[in-house]
Image (cartoon, rainbow, N blue to C red; front, side):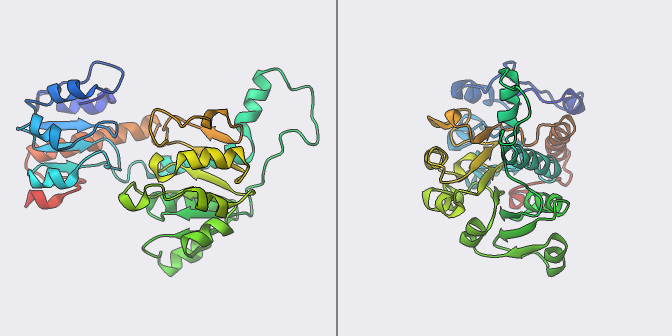
Length: 318
């Protein structure tokens, strides 16, 4: 295992497999990872670990890779499949918590919560004032959702309580009854960007979604719109975003993910109209434990010859 996970999940390995855990509270250096996998049958890894042909070469016994995340853009799944290595992920269990975090971002940037907190800590508050830290209302506004998968839908369900209109774009439309319940309308992406007060990203990172949001798209969002990203950092051109925030091309942004994590592009942290979080989308005790349990279940099921809960490339299993 490439990082320490909740112990209750790891205890399930006792008496069934021999296992080792990265002893450092950091991502393993590449050479450390390649050395650690040379004799393993299974690997439980994170998004921060690159699992590619070089690693498969270094781990000739490897049979199963369990990714501790719903996304798996860190893994060369085609290469794994070619070599007969099963890849699994942790879908479903982090949907609601990520939607909660998305709303935390949205409310924080709309009502300038982080700025207000800093203002108070700096001792600047001298009394109520009509024009102090004015933000934007959320109730009754239009929420744009790019990527209406499980997390996107969970975000939309929360918007119902705020009496919001939903514009969304996705390859697949929701059933008419779901659209009616969510007050949602499927449109092209440009219409989502132009017509929404808040634009929330919920797409996987693929070649097609890399820099999905760049200079042109930010200009479409406009000076009264906000961008929320709790999907994957490279979906947004961070250099273009910094310029948009500086120039007030958009009103603000709230980010849980970054293009070159853990780094941020120069100038991003200097902008007051952005909320920045260290990839906390699934960071609740309950959810991180469920993720660990699912990853462990995938590994144990594989070695027990049972059906895997969440294989990414089930064709390898025959």
